[in-house]
Figure 1 (tube, rainbow, N blue to C red):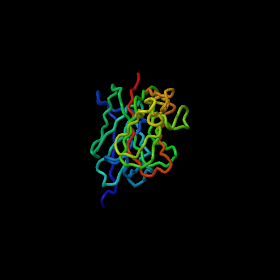
Figure 2: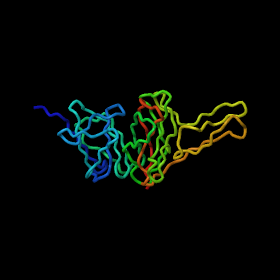
Figure 3: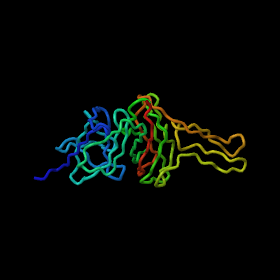
Figure 4: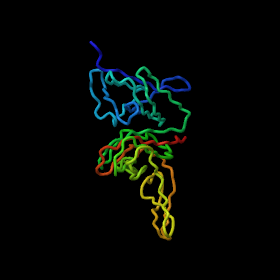
Length: 258
């Protein structure tokens, strides 16, 4: 009788020493290779399905995680974030690979977060910025499946103290495939050139005043950094009303402060 499911397991390993890392709260999100979706994921070899796996990361226990897929799945993409905030995006990982190397000396990291269609309701991605003193330096948005006329907002769950559902991205368009420019538009006016700072970077990463075609209202825009506090940590996104097809990736590059 053939085995119905394929077993996968991964262990966190210190890149410098080769020692196993004891981690009981790090997260591993399993994605379809090359896409912001997830294959069917099972929590046992008897076919216990994980509900909505694209938003249900597996949690490391003693630095290890184990799961199953259908036999047809031979490679996956992995989103990893450890208990200390080291983040990795591993592409096209075969089931025969078991070690995830962690560079404990590296301070610069980037968390990759998939997004899908979401109709006007804040959605918890399941991925967290787990500790205080992660300095988020930027946010990037890549659309792989467009949704004409629709936008997306990205932030931290508004229900958490200090959270803001559009703190990272405020009403960015998902109508065009590729990377989305989040900087404000500079418009050449009749009276004065001005900033249109009404969409793009959210308040976690910028401060702005929308301008208009009048000398007194040129507007302005400045970038800023966002430092995590360990309380507001659950990354969320919200699609505009009517969103039904948009999908892609959110990239959060950050620095782990000492």
